[in-house]
Length: 208
Length: 208
DNA sequence: TAGATTGTTAATCGATTAACAATC
DNA sequence: TAGATTGTTAATCGATTAACAATC
Image (cartoon, rainbow over all chains, first blue to last red; front, side, top):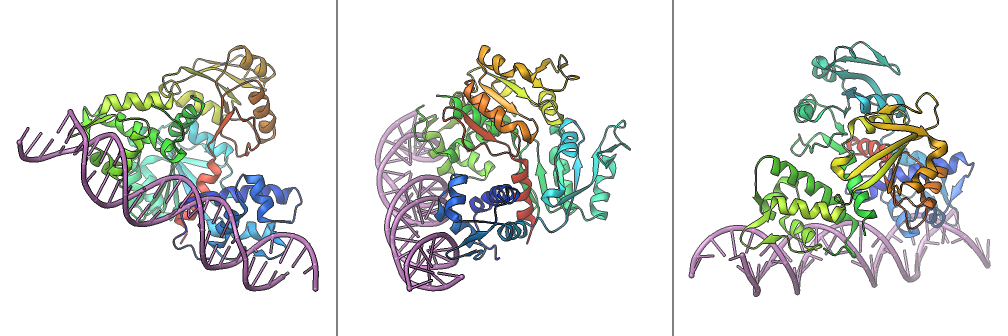
């Protein structure tokens, strides 16, 4: 289960495998071959086997892959079993939507607090998550060993917040803003969800 | 400006170039070299030049690239000037957040309606976008030549809605659900925003 | 003109695909 | 055992990087 030098392309397919395997498991299917899984996902059997073999041999010759075992391995690889904690910074419509709809726990992250500067939000509890004053963000993050910070706040405050969070020792920033967080501390990883880039790509793809 | 055979890797960098160029323009900078742009974006100068040359030569030897011209070209490449129309299907927290926060027009898409099955929402106007009964979605899409459908509705209804929309002739589906839309009509493009995949990738990256 | 920087070709690198021996 | 399918090595393909002649 070594992960040295596994390319990001492989990594980004892992959640997708996980998703398909979960579906299959839910359908009561117990095993699957690389060929069958590849066909369903629009990949090649070779690629599926290569991908899994980056982390070790999870299959069995002549049989295929045991779905629940494979799922468990991927879960472990992705760190979904690590019990990470997270906070949400910015409880506007998007932050609110994430707190309400997104099943963080299913992805191994427990949201332990939310932060906003708006007085009317502070003290409220949204889907069991309490909203605090952003003024206390830094000390909270330090005091509670927060692993992940979700940025759903307005552009203007993003860079500074990201910098502070990195210095406060968070391990990952889940960035929903369209701001690029280029030069952040090396020990802090940034994962972007750029809605803007996504719709522009779609625009390209529908343009002849 | 031919786009035959340009790889998706190149395409996905285009919105990012666009973003950086917009920043530079806002800062009053008029020209930039491939080297300088590459440094800012964490790419190589070669890659920047190769990328732009997929679509034609927008630079000038000994000078660099004129930022506003380059921006205009990218806008054209991405189809941001085509005046696409879109509708939002599912006005839950996320659909609501998009209507309220996301500047569709800046990305060349005009949202002309939203749809939901919940009676209390139907008839409301959110940020100038009227909410209709989903029962009328298909005929609306056909009647108004809708280009893009934004899917922000619950899992259960996703596959069928996507299928209907493809058959109704929409060109692109912007899919915010965690449902994979594998076997959709060839003429309809699907662009996914998989929050789930994104946070799992982040989880991996912070896991040692 | 000299200097700078592009456009473009060639070289390198990495990822995907194919093939097949190992083995369940 | 025979059949199936993996794990893994080798071949291919594509993308990135380097180099440099063209030219502003």
